Length: 114
Length: 109
Image (tube, each protein chain N blue to C red):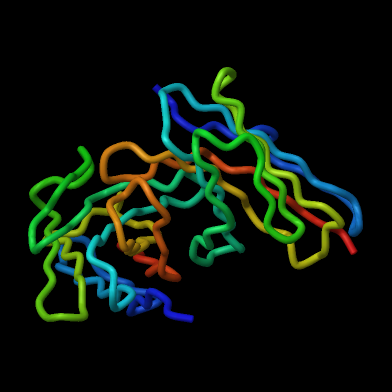
């Protein structure tokens, strides 16, 4: 069964460094998302992406964040200058139709900012 | 406003027992979804119930939706140790899903 994959599974970085989290969505899906989950807290929406542009973003998704679909398969989340509070699990998701229907999530990347 | 709040926050049961958890939401929805998350892992989609449906089954899962009360319930029948996980309801709004805080379910063998 097709699934969303994410790399790396765990990323440790120093505060102020740039990180890029990578995702390979399900191949026939057109809508892509990033969410994050701070330890012990809710899963929070960051951004949705369709047709090579952001379709919606949350207040969390400030200028430090960017997303890109550099080729036909990858979808990336870049954090330009990481802060301690960026430490969280980051989930990529994809769907065939817009967000109102089932979204399929990857296993997540645990980001630890020291 | 908080959308999709689960109750209880935690639940401990013996294997073979049923587990019931509830979700309340505030705004109108066209569907409600339930996801499972094993400790430290990704979110697995369990079931989607549309606003014109009152009940839906999938294997040992039974979901109800009461749009008049803005609430949903997830029942896991004949629970197994492998059902130990956190369960989240999620409601769509625009392009995103809004998740509740989840119910942590522990199934003791």
